[in-house]
Picture 1 (cartoon, rainbow, N blue to C red):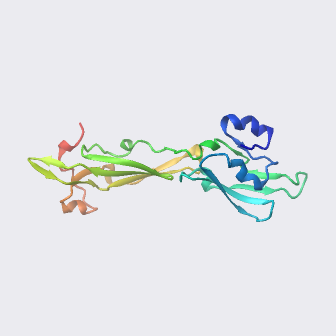
Picture 2 (cartoon, rainbow, N blue to C red; picture 1 turned 90 degrees about the vertical axis):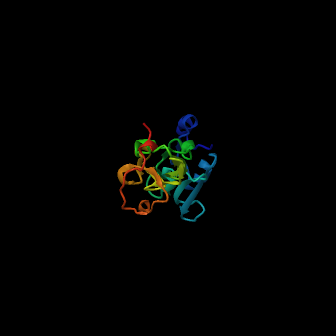
Picture 3 (cartoon, one colour; picture 1 turned 45 degrees about the vertical axis):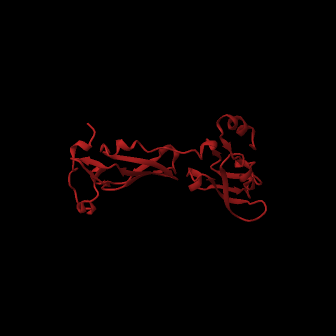
Length: 209
């Protein structure tokens, strides 16, 4: 990786912190970050050869959001004063650049947010950008020699979305569910199609002890 100052060289190798100092031209932004696998840069600004004013983002090819994919890194050439010919970066330091595209799991466990103790209930987890999805399914229920098709209620999925704009203070928001309970109910009962229905689970033995 190309580093443009001795200070950056000293801290950049071990911790993958990139220093964008006054000697780093705005036009070299893509070159600085070009050595990180799965990461590309996107800049906009003045189209002159030296690109004296740029707003740049670090884009993860795997779709993972990071603070610098949503907030711009700004650069402009100093045109007046004693530092003419140098460049001003904001911010001038990118910490843990090699980890920006790693999957970031900030959501607590599903069971700490909802009551999902129904024995027939199962779920699959997937992550898309800043959002984590839990898609629910239900096993069939057998009782007194009869088999019933079951469905998740009151929703067949929930989401947890994390705001990563402030890496030091990531906040996550869970989808609201009535009474915070997801359970399996009989799919053939019309009352469970009614969003306002607030009945009790049909069979107590479908729950974990």
